[in-house]
Length: 216
Image (cartoon, rainbow, N blue to C red; front, top):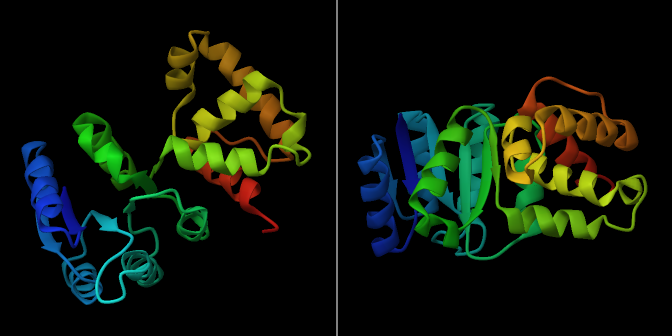
C-alpha cells in the first residue's frame, strides 16, 4: 500500500515513515509543505494520504486544503488528517463530499501504533476513522436538538461508536451485548434520525455525520 505523508516536523515525519514501513506500507513520498504535497498527490497517485492539517507556507490549514483539492481532482482519494487539536470545522470540511475514505485523528493517537495503523488501513479501504474526541464534540453540539435529543442513552452510545467507523460486531464486543441487540439499536437510530437504513457501514457513518453537521 503506497502512502504519501505530509508533516512539517522532521522528527514526527521520520517517526511516521519508520512506523508505517515497519507495518508493511510503502512510503511513496514524505513531504513537509503544501506545494510539495499537492505535487506528490497529483504525480504519485498514492493509495492513501496521511496529512498534517497545518503545513508551510501558511501554517494554517494548508495540508487540509491540499488534500481537499486532491480529492476534488481524484474523487474518493483516501485521506487521513492529523491535527493537534479538535477542530470541528476541519472535520466538517473533510466529510462534506460524503464519498468515504476519510479520517481525522488527533496526533496523540499516533503514539498508539496499532490504533494509528488500523486507522490508515481503514481509510485506505474506503472507510472512516474519526477520533473519539471529535465525535463527542459533534454529538455534544447536537445534544439538545431534535430528533437527536430523542435518542436513548444507549442509542447515543451506539451512534458515537458508529460514527468512529466501527461495525456492529465491533460495537457489540465493546458494549458486551449481542450483535442482534446492536442491530436493533441501529435500526431505531436511523428511524429517529429519519435516515435510510443501509447495509454499507461506511455510508451509514457518513450519513449520520452529515446529519449531525447539517444546517450549520
